[in-house]
Length: 145
Image (tube, rainbow, N blue to C red):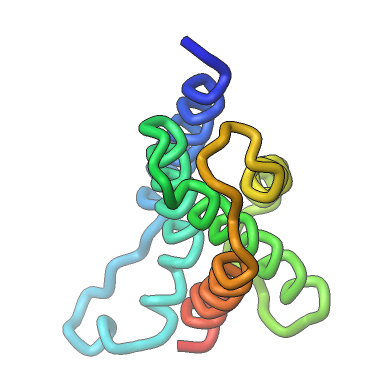
């Protein structure tokens, strides 16, 4: 296996393990009214980050042309989660251990996306800006629904 597939496999495995942990921690409401409260949907934020990491790993594994965009989207979502938490705009639901793992993956994914390490197509300014905006939108959606 080459480096690209090994890195992609690590991303996918991390996403699956953390996704299973976050899914097991979901609290489902007992009545119908609970499904319409923001607290219910807010708890899916960490799971959404896992889905982004899984898709980024999958795209990297198959060498999809949009790999760098998805990598940047994942990275910006994680970085904005941390940044918004630090400035007090949100209180993140991502546990510290997962945030550290996500942060390591995000920095590496950002480096991969902007360095075009595996020749999957250099990310354009519009793609980078779009991934930044979408990363912020995902983060704010799950915290300010």
